[in-house]
Length: 94
Image (tube, rainbow, N blue to C red; front, side, top):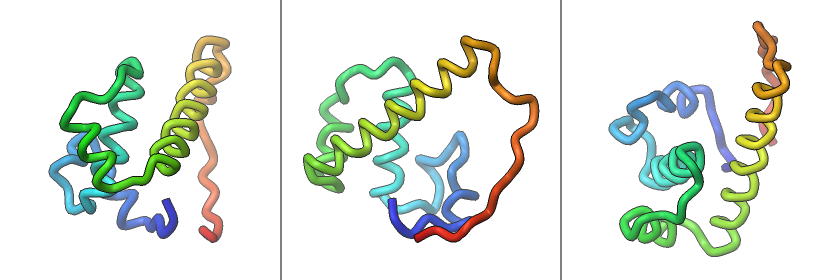
């Protein structure tokens, strides 16, 4: 999502659904949580939230991006390639 800031990242915690994030961000994170938990179809409440905040194309793009990152992360873990430390890069966000 465009406009990601350090303050927004700070609000992404285990309790992000009760944070100061906008409902749009909370919905995207709820969708990510659902995908991480096994990737089942959204329940009626989550589907309604997704459709209230995102177009069909945006839902597809979110799902594809999240699925790609989750899949790559799982591959690294399974192959034992997860780094013990990861350098932090701070670059401009377009």
